[in-house]
Length: 207
Image (cartoon, rainbow, N blue to C red):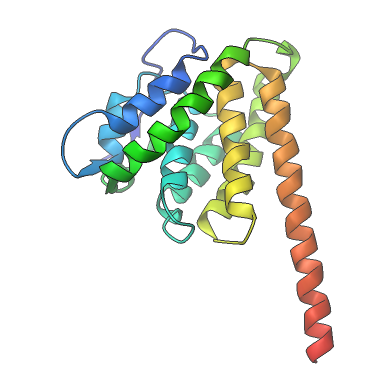
């Protein structure tokens, strides 16, 4: 079966879409929640909405298992980079499932933070909300998703925060949130550079 496309299901997104993503993680019955169920419950299927959903799922899981949503995050970021209008996910990814109770606990903890974030998000710095910059954001999401796939100390959580910032900025058309995403992306790059340098020094010491 051909991969499913996710056209926008609502008018242009607002900051309230963040709460809608949390609702998508807790809606329904059963011990397991599949990606298809979460996507079906999601009110906003733009790139921002799907990235936010996948990132929250990744943060529900320990670093090793976060590769399950990390791979689709890589795919969605790549689609943004290539200029695709709407995200899509293959059927075998949509069939993946995770523990609903764990998702509900994460959503409950995140809800007060999301409520505070929603109060400050607003459309601004419109020059950053352009197709060209969206492609660059897609490139950054590709890089950050790698840190969700490969469990590296310090980088998993920081990359997740960067993806959340990019998703919030895309949903609310908030350029300041996108800048926060870039700051966290640069931070991940800096931490990775320090880790590589330390590994090289260690290798020289033992060789």
